[in-house]
Length: 295
View 1: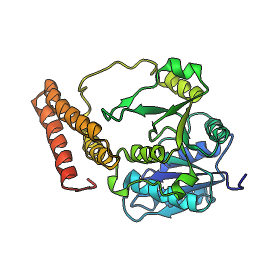
View 2: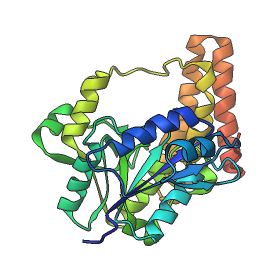
View 3: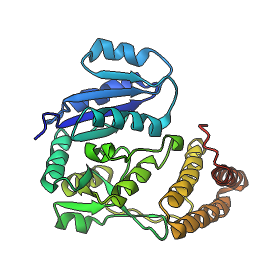
View 4: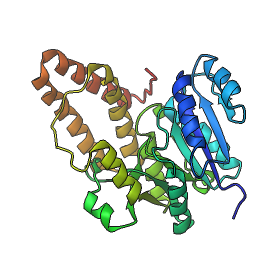
């Protein structure tokens, strides 16, 4: 076994206090990483000052501009994979591992499966290549197996990547900036023949914590207006990803669903419907013009 078994990186953006709490929880794991790298997208010196004061052993790289999650993830994955680490935790500053033994359980799962395991995680989904939509894993299936194979592990779900896959050329698309960069990465891993696994025990425990064993289906639910900007990235980036991975039916389905949702959003009022519709049209237009703005 390599003496570089496990490292971690965390991308942060002007959230020094939240980051310090996450670092503490990472180092409190029963299997802490041998190296922790902070990738700083922020514009202030507060993060570096806090690190020097509380965690001087932590490695640090300042990007110099806001590269978004996609750009920060790319930097973290490239640095740690080139240093030879077998497993790499892909983290955000506000998503620490939820239990003290999360890392230990996930690394043990990945190592028990072997070299064909591209990544492990706590929560994941299957991806419908015809509709472009995510398919939820049923709790009954999780109770029957120690682990379940999925197509993607989302950000914030303790995503731990096989470093060899990164050295093989699988990396995030920096231009996506925000949203679905993890799905693009995961589809590339699957195409290369890697398996993506979630730990059933951790998955069920997460559903217990969040009371998510059953999720009601809603059509065009109303969101807070201050988070609608996320949909711009989701639509624009999803269309790019479907085309990149040659999924024409998923591309068409996602486009259709996006416009249908914009029409249905008018049930929440004219103003809200206009906001959603403008967001959708802007995302589609920018995608069609290959404009990957960082708004």
